Length: 444
Image 1 (spheres, helix red, strand yellow):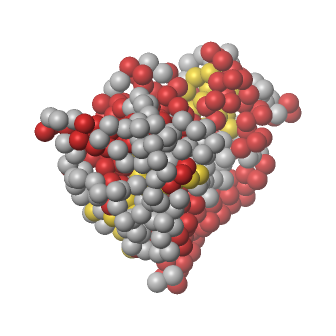
Image 2 (cartoon, helix red, strand yellow):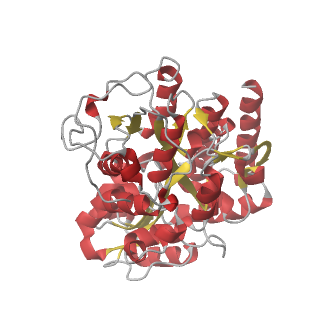
């Protein structure tokens, strides 16, 4: 579908010295987060819960964990180093053991659907927000009620929008993700401000016979092409992506942005099927492509290849308007099947506050959603992360309603036929809208 999918406290280890009872979901807790690198087992004694949480009333949690609570948390392999560390700190503070199992974030809703009812699912899960509609309509997760006010106050508006469904807040945001403009400073000393600037650069940098181009991106991918729809007033679903009956991908604003999209074929005369992540990566790191529109998942590879010649900047303006990209919000959610929902909610809140988000950034280079974390020198002093964060400010969360699944294929077909076959954008987008409406109707 798209690639957008790929937080801080300091670790101390302090838990029970005996083998712990299974999590509320029936899992063996011998792998609770701790110092054992293979099993994650916690085996150092802890002070009692009252001492760990502190005597001051100000330190008391908003809700009390259930007696004997233990938790199972699902986390991706790539971001597990963060969760291992934050789980140790949580256990030290609340005396609640935590076991961590590796499950890809994009697979967790599907996994919970089968594992939750049988009692072997996680108490706390993490997934990109575009899976939220399916989790809510399947009654798999609990609303964020006890910590809702502080979650809303502490995080950016679009992150709260992303982790809410039908006006109800469910998630505990921990990171944002969008795409931006990578550029090679040895070829492009200053990032272009507009796509007109990009076209001007191409007159100097392009040499198609040698496979050299000023700019490359996945020109057939709806995820990366969203700026050409949204920047000038188009949209997929109305009412902030929640109204399945209001489709705006073919309105006048979208057609204005599509003129810019179509004009770029002159500087990237390649079929959409001939541009994929591997090809782009090789050309950009090899110095044959000067600029690439891509996500933070490529940051470590690009830094290794280009060093201090790498720059990250917002996407160039579209028809004089700031480029509006898609963003994804990754958040914790509490399973409705958990036997220890209070403990699970405490963990989700603890592992998503300012310190947690800064820890996640230090571990994997993530973009915080917490407003204080975004203003921290750790973030503002990182030219790469701050570049993505600037673009994030002009992003829109992907719609999280289930009907979004009907959008990708028709829109990709529209972009592809406009790019490859020079088809009229209005005809292509009119047809995409018709197909999406039919799919929505047929799926009930």
